[in-house]
Image (cartoon, rainbow, N blue to C red; front, side, top):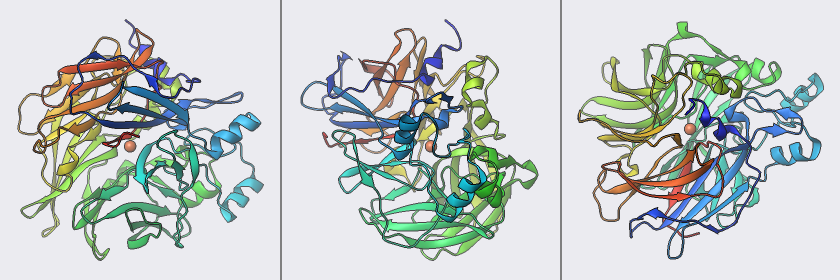
Length: 471
Ligand SMILES: [Fe+2]
C-alpha cells in the first residue's frame, strides 16, 4: 500500500456510458429505490494545458438508479461552454479557480463590461422544474436532463439581479416553498446579496444586502426559519483585483488572520442585520446546520484553522507526501440578545462533506455524517466515512483498505423517525481494483450492506443528490 494511491481519483476519465447494469455484492435494502446523482471534475486537461487544482477540472455527472430492475449507472460530461471551448481550441477560454486562462488586458476589460463567466458547474446539483441544475460559484447555471444527463439550456432568471460569485449550496426550504442563496457583487462598493425565489420559479427577490469592502470567500451560509448566518472567514479579496488583476479566482484572495472571523446574522423576513459577532480566524467550506435553542443561535460548521486547505488541494501538492490539513466540526453558540458568543469543538474526528438528516435542518440534530481521514497518515486523503454522535457516544466509521469514499448522502428508511434507520450512499474509489463502487452502508451502525462496482474509477467529486424518482 502507498499513502498516495488515492491519486487515481485525480486522473482524467474519458469513458462515458449509459445505463450499464451493475453487479450487487451484498444485499440492498428492499425499500431503497431512487436515483443518486453525483457531480465533480473528471478532466484536468485543456489541450496541452494541465489544470492545476481539484476545483478546476471539467464537470462530469453520474447517475445511479436503484429500482425495479438491476442497479444501473450512467455518466456524461457536462456539456458546458467552458468544456466545449477547451475541446475546440485546445486551451482554456474561461477563468477557472486556479488555472490562468492567459487573458490579456483587452479581454479583462471586455469581460468586465460584458461579463461572460465560465459555466463549468462541477460542484453540486439541485432539482428545478423536473430537471437538474448544475451549480458552481460562477453565476451561470446549466439545466440538465436527469435521464440522459445532457444540457438542455441555461437557467434564465427574469429579474435584474447582478452578481459575480454565488454559492453552489443554496438552501431549499420545502416548507416555505423557496430557495435562498447568496449572490456577491463586486465593484467600487461590494455587497453580499441574499435572495429568495419560489421553488421552480425564475424571479429572484432580494432579502437583504450587506456591504463588504473586502468580501470573504463564501462557499456556503447558514439558515433557520427566521435567520440567515453569514460567516466571513478572513480569506478576502480586493474586488477590483478580482475583476481586473490576477487572472485566477483563488489568486485574488488573501489570508488575513488579523481580521478574525466575522459572523453576521440577518433576519430572513426583513433582511435587517440583527447582530455581528467577532470570532477567532478560521476557514471553512461547509455549514452543517443552524437552529435556535433557548436564547442561543447554534451554528455548526466544518472548519480549519487556516485557509491552507485550499493550497493543499493543488494537484501537485496532492501528489506529494506532505501533511494535509483536514477540517473538523465546530459549533458557534451565538447569543442574539447579548451579542456574546462561544465556540465549541464538537469532535476530534477530521470531517469534511458534513451532512445531517435533512429533516433536521433548522432544528436540533444529534448526528453528523461526513468523510474523514487518519491524521497520522502523511500524504493521505479522505479515507473513511464517519458518523459523529453529539451525545458523546463513540463515532462510527466505515473504511476499507485502499478505499477512498466521496461525500456520503443519508437516505432515510420510509417511515423511520429522523436520525434513525436509513443508509449512507457514497461513491468510493477502490485504488487496488482501479475502479470505484457504490457503497451502501447502514446509517446507524455503519456496517457495509452492499457494494456495486462501477465500470471505471470515478474521479473524486463534490456533491450530489438522491431523489426517490427512478429517472
Ligand atoms: Fe461544497
